[in-house]
Image (cartoon, rainbow, N blue to C red):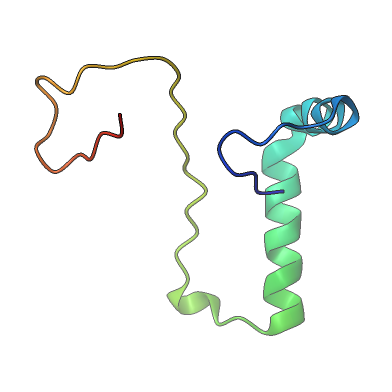
Length: 72
């Protein structure tokens, strides 16, 4: 499930996300493996990156990498 910034998740959706959180690696791996099998993806040239980053609050741009785009 991909959500846009500011999207509200109904209580039942939030509980569902909470329920899968402890098993997230298994869920992602299972879905990924199934997609590889179903679509015949050549994994010899596949890079699997499930990295994400989330921050909350106000952060100063001072001292940050010049290439880092900071939204106000």
